[in-house]
Length: 189
Image (tube, rainbow, N blue to C red; front, side, top):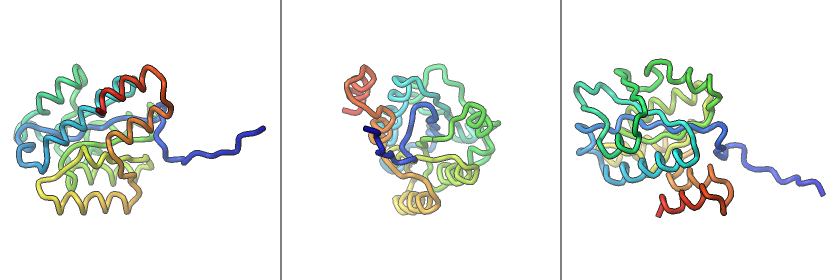
C-alpha cells in the first residue's frame, strides 16, 4: 500500500539546517533578561548540532565595545571561527548568507541577543532572502521583556517559525532509538 502521508514542509531536516548564534557577548549579557536561560539553551543547541554533525556559525557585534562571546559558549564552540560585524543584521557579516546558500543551508535556527535588534533584523533579512528561519524563543532575549515579546511577535508575523531549543533538536532527530537520540536526550534533560 502506498504511503500518502505528508509531513509539514517546514519541519527541520539535517540536510538543510544550520545554527546561527548571534552576539552572546560579555559586556551586554549581564543586562539581558534571564541571560542564564539563554546561555543554557544555546549550549543545548550547540551540543545537539554537534551530535548531529550540523554546521554552526556565530557572530560578535562590535567586540571592541561589547567584548567577545561569553566563555561558556566559546568553550562549546571550540575552534569555530567567529564572524565579527558592525551591522546589527548578520546580513552585513562578511558573506554569511552567501555561505548558507552555497552550502544549500536553507533552514536557519537562530539564537542570541538582543531579540529586538540584531536577532530581529537578521531574521527579517533571512526571510527577505527566502531562508526558512526558526527562532528558539528560549535561547533569545532582550534587556526588557516588552522588546522580547514584540520582537517574537513581529518575527512570527513575517514568517519566522517561533519554537524552542528542545523542539528544534527533536525535530532534527525525527526518530527515536538512535545513538544521536540517546545523546540529545541527555543534553536536553
